[in-house]
Image (cartoon, rainbow, N blue to C red; front, side, top):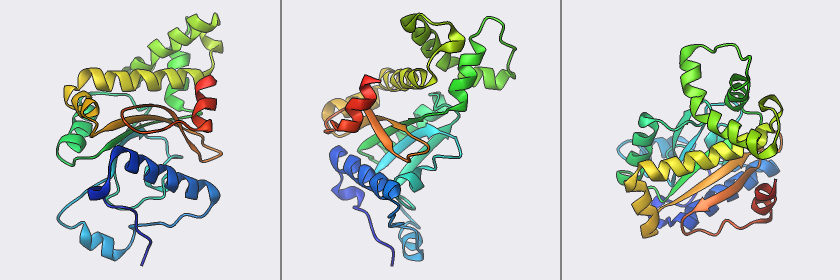
Length: 229
């Protein structure tokens, strides 16, 4: 039988956070347990789900959520789109995870080499070719981060640091999530929920905490290094 993770009934925001970080450590070290991926788990989930976290991340094929955190069926409530751009359907899905499924943790997951960030940078140039309308609509919320990084760095848009744009967009996404959802903001204030902004490093496989809103301790050397960049 496959190894098991802790269940949601034991989960505080800090416990859920530690469960994800431990799983990512196993993934990075090449020693995954592959929990909750057997027929027994399928039977257990037939009439219920109790995920330990909601994860809102980019659709990029290189960061499958359950794999990089060494989790399995029923462990994560996952919402993904290109560039992890918050919209009504995303917000409703996350609120469902908090209000109905009672998750104690939301992960907002960005990553390096993001195609949506690159497209936002390219689209902000003076001579940029128009994008297909639905792609343009999707990446439009990333453009303010592009312009802010360009202004702060005194560089032309085409030369901005894509990693810095990604981090700024991550901040914008978490801020918008809390501003647009009183339900989520109230749960954070009550201490029953935390929101963690995380950057994923594709080659290394490491999920690096950027900042956390809520009552968990995410102060690690990796986080401090990320925040300084």
